[in-house]
Structures are given as C-alpha cells and as structure tokens.
Image (cartoon, rainbow, N blue to C red):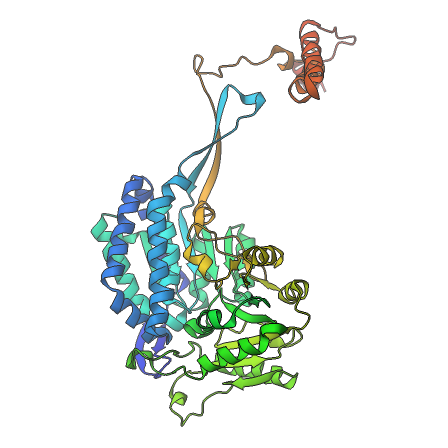
Length: 549
C-alpha cells in the first residue's frame, strides 16, 4: 500500500510513500536486532561519536530540515527551528555529555548482612525499541527516541505519523548517512511509515514501546502491550494550565504567553490550553494578548519569513476545533477574535488553516476546558476571588496532568502553587515547554497524560533492562568468602530458629542493649545443640516407604 502526502498549507500533492505492512515491520525489526548485537558490543565512545556526527549533520542542514518540516506539517520556520531543531540539538548535547554517567554501573549500600559484598545496579540495553510518534513535530519526534536508543546501546524501529510521512524519507536518509559515516551499523535505526498495521507490527516485534499520541490510540497500544507483557511509555498529551497571579505583570509576559499558545499552531503536547488569570489583572492580560494576536500574520510559511502562523496538520481537525468553540460560546464564553473555519474561496481556505483564536470567560464545565484542543485557541478563565486556592482548584479540575506554569512576582509563591498543581512538570515564571529544554529532566505526566518518562536519566534507564548484582569483596577458593553458618545448614540441627532470632536482634535491635542482647542470644544458639526428642524420618526413609507401598 501507499500513503498519499500533501502540503497542509497549499494542499499541493507531495507524492506517495510506502505503507509498511506487519511483515515489513517484522523484517525491519530483525535488521535492527542483528545490528544491535554488534552495536551493544562497541565501546561507549562509539555511541557518543555517532551522536556527534548526527549533531554536526543537523547543524549543517538547518535550512533543509526546517523547510522539509514546514512543507510536511505546515509550521513556520521559526516554529521549526524552536520546536524541531533546537530541541533536537539540546537532546544530542545532553546525551553526549551526560548519558554515560547515568548508564554505568551504580554502586549501592550492601547493608549489615552483606558487609563482605559489593552491591551494584547494571543497565543493559533492552534490545530493539519500538516508537510510534505523533505528527506535530515530524523531525524531533522521530529523532528523539532514535537519540536515546543509540546512546543506550539499543536498535530502534520508529514509525512517524502517516500525516507527516513525506518528510521521513529525508530524515531516514540523513540518519542512515550519519550511522555509516560514524562507523555504526547502518541497520541500527529503521524508520518506517504506515497505518495501523505498521503500528501493530512495532508493538509485536520490538522489546519496549514508546507511544506519543492520543488517549484513544494510546489505550489500544497499552492493551496490546498488556497482552504481550511488554513495557510501554505512554505520552498522551495534555491540557496544561497557565496561571497568571494578581501580582504578575501582563505587559512583561504577553509575548511569552502568545508564543506558548500559538507556537506550532498550538499543536503541542506540553503547552498551555487553559489560561487561569486572576481578576485583578484579567482585563489587562486579555487586552494585551488580543493586541498581539490582531497583528499576527497567517499564511503559507515558506512564502515569507514574516508569517507568524501556519496551518493545522489534520484536515478533519478543523471541525473538531470549531465544535469546541461553538459549544463554549453557547455556554457563555465570549469570542474575541478568530473562531471560524475560513471559506474555501478565501485566501486561507486553500489549506487547513484555523485562525488564532481567543475565548474569554471560559468555565470548567465547557468541553473546550476538558478536551485536548491541539490547535491555536487560547481559553481564558477568571479567578474571581483572586486567591491561590481557587486558581489551584481550577487547574486541577481536569483529567490531564502533563505540564503547568505559574507567573507571579513572588518566585516562592509560584513555586508553592506549582507543587499543588497536578502535573508531571511545572515551570515557574516561564512557559511549560521550558522544562523540555532541560534535557536532564524527565518528560511525562500522569492520569490521561500517560505514564513513564522519556528524557533525563529516567528516560535513558527506562530503555534498559535493570540488573542487580551482589559480589564478594574477596574470593575464597572460588566460593563465598564467608563460610555458610552450620546452624542453618541442612539437615537441621535445631539451632536455626534461635540463631536467626539472635541475628536479627543483633542487627536491628533497639539501642546498644538490644543489639548486645541479640549477640548473646546468637552465641547461645550457636553453642547449644538441642536433641531431637522424636526421631524424624529423612528423605531416604520416605523413598523406601514409597517403594514398599
């Protein structure tokens, strides 16, 4: 089969790409698995070298990468540079400089029973990672799991969205050339395109799954992984709150707020969709963001560097956005600007454009305040009492829990509020996405936003099989350095219960007296050998009886 590709801004036909079947994905996974066996045996320095080559290639091809992303997903060049390329470069930088520290064996306390041993945790590659990623950032979403898989010693099969399949042809060639140039196995990374069958194939034939997408599809992936007893990372999007406290300055944050709301046409997993604004600064906040939006330019991004907003990726998504806006207005929200699907005969009607939209006086009973929007719509909600308690309550009245942000003149106040907002990530006096620029931090949420993490040490270790190892500090003729206690040897001498009780009292008893008492009891049990009042049959006696009967 084939996937038909088009430019969402112009609806220009971009041709077709192959739709991989389950059998195709199985073959791709087999190639990655064979390459991974070679890759895992190579020194860690080779992994870092490969990522350095990839970083160099990205920096040398910024213009091409951004143009391809713009053509395939309708975003502006600035959106592409910020969301696609800058984030990828930062992930590469952090992985090259920090991954080895978090993946080398980690020594832990051995405890009083194992003082003669060392205890460590080892992190071994899972094998072949399978990633199914979303359409909103076609370059970064594909490169993100590739980078983590390479540095952790894994192979990977990654499927981009069928809605942005055209760009994966170029990105696949870029990665393959970097693997070859750096001396890595070229089959280590397999980028596939396709529909549901390809996604099912990834779940079937890979060892750990990373899914980035909707709650509905993510639930199906989780069920499939559950049947196969296979680990999965689910990143299912969010509905992040951005709180603007009564002591915040709307003038200073207005540009940042608009960038957060309209970056990539609002198609962001971690990005504000609910603006929780205190009554004291509400009117000032609204007037300032409205003034900015009214001057924004929307159109085909590759036509001019002065275009602020591009198009949405999914054609059918426009109707979803409109239904959310219409229902909100019907329930009392006020539409300040935007909020319509451009007529086919209009300038913007030639593509999948939805104008930047501002809705005010939104309330939590509106669907637009509960469902993920994934579009260029700012929903502003008033904190009538000007209290932090009301603001936090409004934030937590949602099933998603990915990111959050609080703006306040008091950093301590904003930090306290962040702690109380239910979210996997939080930003103090900045937009939610800033946490992703700190690649040392794990990325993810809970509730309907999914579970587990990628990025940071947690993300790297999540692509490893964790092994716990105990080892004697000294070796005594190839056996344990410490002789095995006769009191608990087979067959039983009858001393075992008293010996183990004294041992526990000695190690864990209350205070010096308790521990000393335990030592005395242990010594008593060691020297006292109780006699067996009734002779018990042993194993050989039971065998003889079994033969006789």
